[in-house]
Length: 138
Image 1 (cartoon, rainbow, N blue to C red):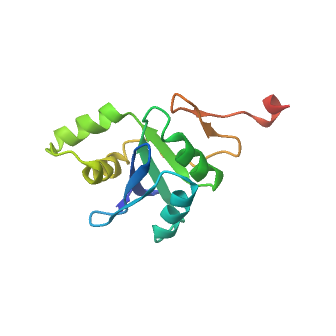
Image 2: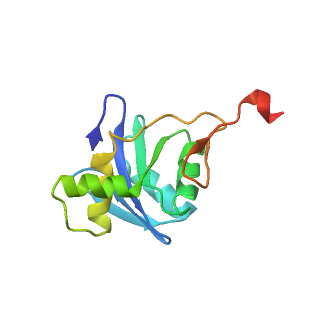
Image 3: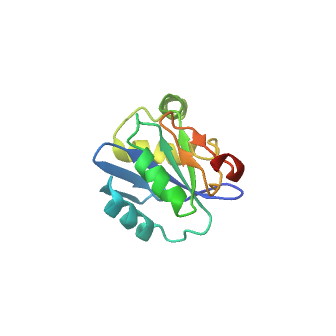
């Protein structure tokens, strides 16, 4: 697994029906892009203490997973797909499939901003984190 100072990075390539997940350089799994798949994903990650899940913004298909993970207290980074592709090209990874994409997202992860979610943080339609303070919630 890719490690930053604070997090172990998990790369997730998001599609409408499935998620390809790069756990480390040698292990990639595929799960359904639904709550049952999200639960399987969490069971497949060996150590969930300091994990950041990095995924591309995919027009909204990433939102259910991002919100599920944030609701469980995990760090999530939703990154720009073009920047990940540019990074992959710069690294010489011109081949493209879902498993390779998940690995490139994982390697790009330390560049993305991984933050622990606040209690009220949710991924918005634009892929940005929207936070409401307790004062504005009333």
